[in-house]
Length: 289
Image (cartoon, rainbow, N blue to C red; front, side, top):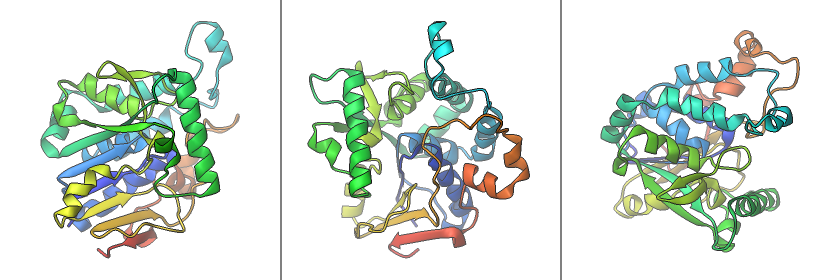
């Protein structure tokens, strides 16, 4: 039914995409020739295509330690990373993407991962800070599906074709780079140059869809936020959650929180792991299925 699927970025909100894909893949006969992902959406695309969603969510929930903080200054003073989320995500990638998973994804589809390149002359940390600031400002003022500030400032998007990579480590590095937001994530090089979060240019990376849609193909775009205005593009269907997830994109729980609460509170589990377990919970904009 759909020739291409896009997984938008959105941090923790991207677990919704995994739930949607699990619920909808069989019903819609999803077997896309092209899959595009940005930031955490690229990782969501990977484990969704591998049918590893339940295992991945279980690992994430088990790793939620109430002692962790977004910024761990004690660890930093001891020579460890300031932000624990980077090492944790790296470990999660190691657990999810092995040689077999890498080969399966290469054989399955044309999987492209969006990364951003900084304007010339900017250091990684300053450039990333400017990009994040521009993204947050535009989202606050205009809340567009496809932001423009980053591109206007000189940020450029690139797409890493998983089929062109040589080994699982290169794939993991591309996924890490696509979520690269210093200081939360380490600066990762792709093709010998620093690459950053794909959302700094467009959190909903649709550029690779153009040839498919121009040829009459159909595409499905999985958003992670609620939008009042959705672009109308022939052959393209946007899907968004039926209600807003107000959790921050990258955040650790407050002191006293325990991950076991998710297992005993169905509503909480739905919000963390996935909103969509049936088609009836979705708001669909664009072409009808």
